[in-house]
Amino acid sequence: MAGYNQKIVRTNSYVEIWEYEKPIFTKGKANSVDETKAKTKHRTFDELTEEEQKERLNRMNKTRLDAKWRLLRIVDCNYDDRTSFLTLTTKNNIQDRDEFNNILKTFIKRFNYNVFNTKKSKLKYLAVLERQKRKAWHAHILLFDVPFIPHEKLLSLWGHGAVRINKVDVDSKENRGRYVTKYFEKGIGQELLESFGKKAYLCSRNLQKPEESKIYLDDGLEIDNSSILYETEYVSKIYKDGQLIDNPVKYKKLKISVEEDFND
Image (cartoon, rainbow, N blue to C red; front, side):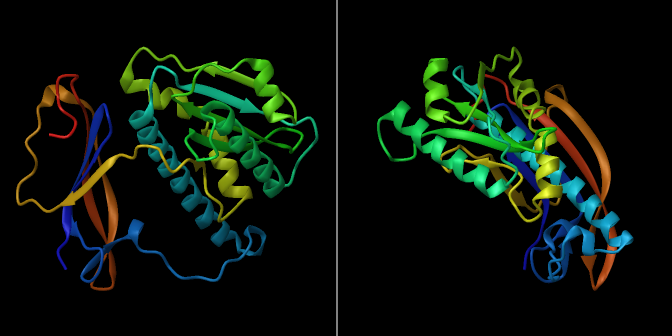
């Protein structure tokens, strides 16, 4: 099976390129460690040995970072001048994640109906759950393309405690994802540790997703150096012939000019 040595991800304002020294195969000769999942029986964190706990925490840290970068890309693909940041807290000390999640889902349905006057899911959102000091769950929600809703109406729709909403206003489009996701990082980390096996974040299905492609090229892509926002090199790992070997990677993040057609 053919492999790839270039991975390209496009959002509305930038392109990311990973150039791998050795090709990655989804099946067969060589597999990326990131794409190879060992089938192991699930055990709780406390059931693991000290070494296994350390290994899981390392994996969780990587998963948290991966979730953060995915959020950055989704935000960039959906951000508009009506993007707002909503925080929901409860008067009662709700420490059960599933209980809070059910309350949140009910609110989202009510909110969707209030804004769009239909039960069909049209609300565009990203949400991360986070624990407060008192151990109660609360939610940070990013809303896309939602008109102004009076605070009293939001309180009524939520019905479980306090509501805070702010418009997201970022001058530089390249920084909008980074600005927004900094409010999600703590919650993502907590979710991975305390709710192992649960999603790091929740999102509606109608969000625009980044465009991703994986190709094999004999020569690297031609790049205009003036468009480079960031670049670095690091070493990843792949399995080849049953052995774990180094696979050097060159990463570049490029800005897309306003004049450039995103679909070109």
